[in-house]
Amino acid sequence: MYVYRYVASPFITLHISTTFGHLSSSTTFTLASAIMPLELHKLSSDEEFPALVDGLWRGYAEPFNGFWEILKGPTQEECTERYKSWHKADPTSHWLYVTDSETKKVVGAMQWNVFETNPYINGPPSLPAYWWPEGPLKEISEQLFAAFFAGRPSKCGQPHVLISYCFTDPKYRHKGVASLAMEWGIHKSEELDLDAFVESTEDGRGFYEAHGFEVLDELHLDAGVDSPSAEFTQRRRELQLPLHGFFMKRRCGANKSA
Image 1 (cartoon, rainbow, N blue to C red):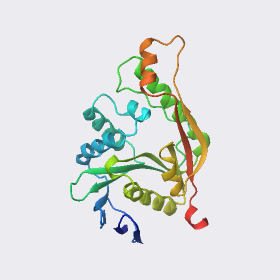
Image 2 (cartoon, rainbow, N blue to C red):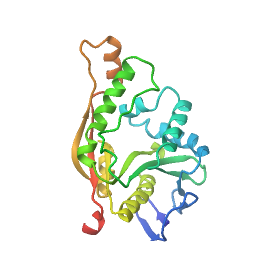
Image 3 (spheres, rainbow, N blue to C red):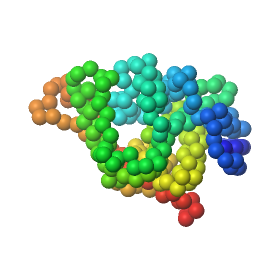
């Protein structure tokens, strides 16, 4: 496991990291900070999902993220059950979440998928937007998902680790929250000798570059139909389409070669 000790001030942060093998599901990381104490946890039970998803809804609310808007579903309760079922059905899924040790609130998290074999041998994954009723929103969602996943076989068709989600509560940004969860994934990448990938928003690009990721390609996501209805056009406008982002890669051993 990792042991982190941070001494933070508005002017300087001292970081000491020691490795003692592997992180178990019961391990908690603690930061002693002059600003606030933070703890990193590896999700291990169903009971942790409501707080995790509550953090998801807060973290992705600002700035507006059209892709999250189609993923979050009609209610937070539905979203919690769906994300719990997705995680339980996926042996590659690892959720690392950060709490404020004083309030116990989830203030950020990252989902890492660890693929020890190529997951795209049979093509890109398919994600039907079954949580939405039939209509323009569901149609737009499924078009965006298809476009989002289409490039994965050619760009990361190999064993690798993938950041599927990364969020931080707006009140806790720029305080090292996401970097805590990033450390776990980078360590796993190096341990297994695997490259890491992420599809980043424009806002997230600088964070990933600071951790050794490089842009491989740009992402352009949009949806359209012939003779769109007024509702289709309105939904597309509400989601602020088209969406733009970046497909990024961190080579295993990037820190050593830097």
